[in-house]
Length: 309
Image 1 (tube, rainbow, N blue to C red):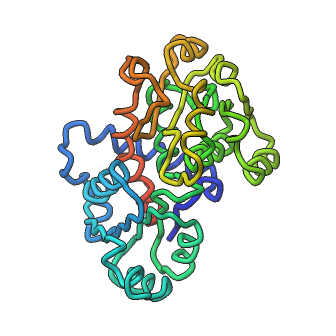
Image 2 (image 1 turned 90 degrees about the horizontal axis):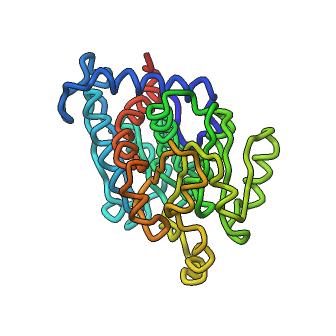
């Protein structure tokens, strides 16, 4: 049994195995419909219990289809229906019930501490579907998408992030260290990664560079990533923040500093951080990026169950 919470805690060789398996599984499904089961049904009879404390579209749909295609089933719980939130039942007791009824637990939460508490008491794998500090399933899928489109290891590519320092960027930084790719980060000075993340970067002899000039960050990029500037975790002055990011909007002019064959990726939902002409252009691969979540999450599930082929 293995957990999938943060990329930084998972060996690089295991992350690579997940991506390799996902590509094989995607290739094998070209003629199958969404709800048709993979030939060997490796997770037949297994139940994935999902709980979402925050809004979800892509993670919810992709995990549902992932377990279904592997031969298992999914049950989604609403936190406001549980004694955990309404009746004061402890995480320990809730975890024991989840372990008795399900085979894996996927949690999207507003608390990193809650993830660790569940991990402590569960006797089944836990998967982080998003937390304030990490969006590991998203970024591993994005690495898969980049390599699928560029047809080369991500270690040979220049990756750029233009946007806020949030949970998605934290996982992209971890991916840069795990997969050894160059990462340029472009964001205003007041919104750059915190001291803890900076220390993590320095400890790992990184290829990560931080700029407060979006043009410098985008120069020579093979891939330009972004995310919504005002995210689900934001509690500060939103008007002030949007003003700070005004010069960081991804438009055709900014993309011109990247390589001619560069691509644009966005984990969605989008806001005003990207111009429609970029978002709807041939450079934009956001729909392929979203769909690939299914394939990678299938392999994440198999990793957690110890069944990667």
